[in-house]
Image 1 (cartoon, rainbow, N blue to C red):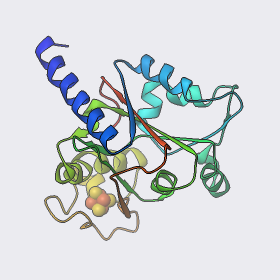
Image 2 (cartoon, rainbow, N blue to C red):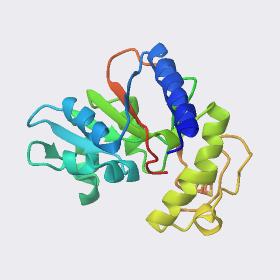
Image 3 (cartoon, rainbow, N blue to C red):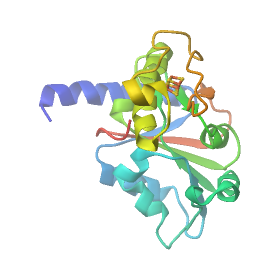
Image 4 (tube, rainbow, N blue to C red):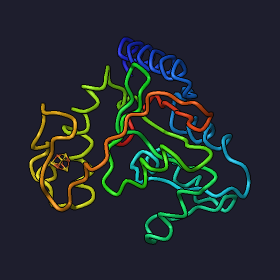
Length: 213
Ligand code: SF4
């Protein structure tokens, strides 16, 4: 990457990590995907149970392969409702975040809501892996990021019948946070802002590469 662009990205990551820590959310920097996998591994103990949210970032980074290794008990959410519920009580829960603000907030919008539920309460440890592309200046930008990028891309990936999957953007771009479509497949159901942490559950690994959407 061009050195000037790299400098801007590194500073943005540093600002965000420092803001997250001010909000008592642990955060670390992983320059590459393989560094991220190593950091994730250090947060696990042999034999622990692991749950996860649906995430392109986890697959692209290689963390999904780590979770599924024989050293751990991975609870496969794709198997059904029982596994979705079990993941809520896993020792460790992995996910990405739809956006992370430079004010140190996590912003997540969920349709099934197992992901935001585990983030807010449940697993003793929640590890969030995110490429630098998830960093936005503030909550307004986070809201737009979901409507313009994350939800449409996920809609296309999941094959849902929503306006964003068809046109590439939300019907309510520029509108209030919770404004959206009336589709039975709507992916934007619960809107969760994590602004502070009172216990030591959440650890964010910010990666110096583009991951997921
Ligand atoms: S509210 Fe509907 S159209 Fe808007 S981003 Fe969510 S799923 Fe897509």
